[in-house]
Image 1: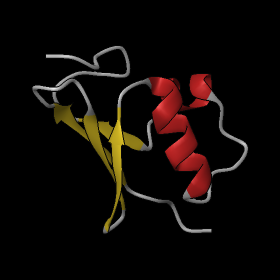
Image 2: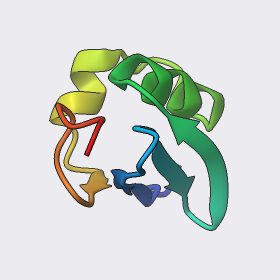
Image 3: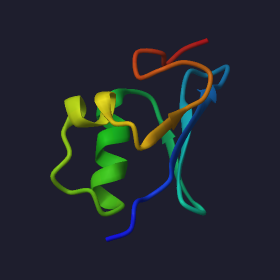
Image 4: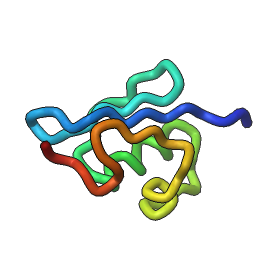
Length: 70
């Protein structure tokens, strides 16, 4: 499988972060757990929260995996 492009956008005023894989917007994640669930549904079924937090595949905008609120 070719490498996927995952972008996690900066936190919104409500605290969630938009998530996009390639050209598909998956929704708003409010935690690392939410993001992990989105990515499993997008074809990365074996990933857990640690994999997500440490992945170089994810472009974190506006803060890393520990930032969920402004």
